[in-house]
Image 1 (cartoon, rainbow, N blue to C red):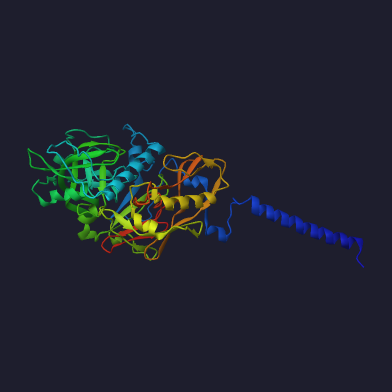
Image 2 (cartoon, rainbow, N blue to C red):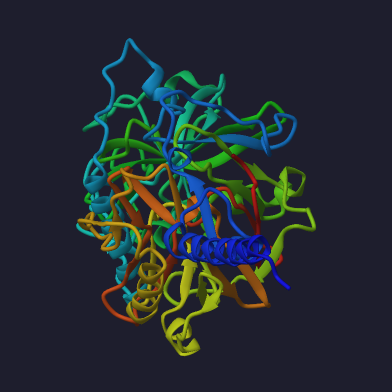
Length: 492
């Protein structure tokens, strides 16, 4: 027979069980943003300390992937503390762009790419003057985010150049700046002080290569019969000058004599204190093609997670890309945009779920990968599906106002950690690429953190895989092999 004490104990045990179950249920419903994740959660979401998405005030250089014994250059973000132009106290600093201005420039670049790819034919003639500029051009805007430092001339002068897979012509500002030069961090290159500089004649076959590289027919100097290049970008920035050849020094053992480049005498625009641009496109005049005998049209890079870290740009198989971790997808050729590196996107997943997007949406638009475009652009139909799925996974966070082209933003000022859906791209050849945690959001401030994707105005406009989505990935271009590869965690 049960005693009153044993009955009381039984009810006490039952009461504890129900209380515990109620607590567990509350935890499941109300504490989704805990500091730990279950294994199932980690396959679908990223959980990060919010401050890890913000750049530090000081530069933290990395040596990962950057081997000074190989043909490897340090990559820095031109708007951050690692850009040496911000460390020169004796010079007037270049004004820092606002996020709205950066995104406005980015849209100008995208518009230029779309115009270049869609136009059937439109080479523009460069007037017969040393300082004239083309009326318009199919070239892309040259205000990319990442810079490297190379040596030019004999003796070599160090110059910071924006590296750009969407451009072909390498150019820098040159003395005597016949018309105009903007402010740059280093002294402007003076070809008269170099033992190895030479102009290219108007009659030289390489002069005519400028047509496909710049979208303009070159001019000819009436006094010296020197080939004149002219290139104008989507934001109306431009460079015009003499087409020449010079010694290019990447490292102490990687030196190229007779490198073809533009020596700018009339330069204006938003190049952020850099000395010019390093063209890594597929045209014969690009660095990739000019260095092909040595590097075999093979290069790789890693873009750092924030502007306070550094990445690398390497050339040749010795510079990276041989790891089994690199997964390759075939390169495609873009109609009317042969200098661009095309990709075949076949699908996108958000939070581990494949989005319901017809394969024809991606195949009809086509896609390129571009180091100079900041925000990835998707066909309107694809972007809408991605945005809606991402918003579903962010319902617990207060929304913030849109930032320029970015329409999905959140106020995370009340959070120390943030949990958000993972995003993956499926490419041709059976390759699935999981974006890094830092490659999904664009952080203007803790109170305005945005999904770093935007939709094109039309499904027929070409999609662009931008540099935010490439953060921390080792991106490998095997141009000779007709493929591009990706591997995770290539740099900090």
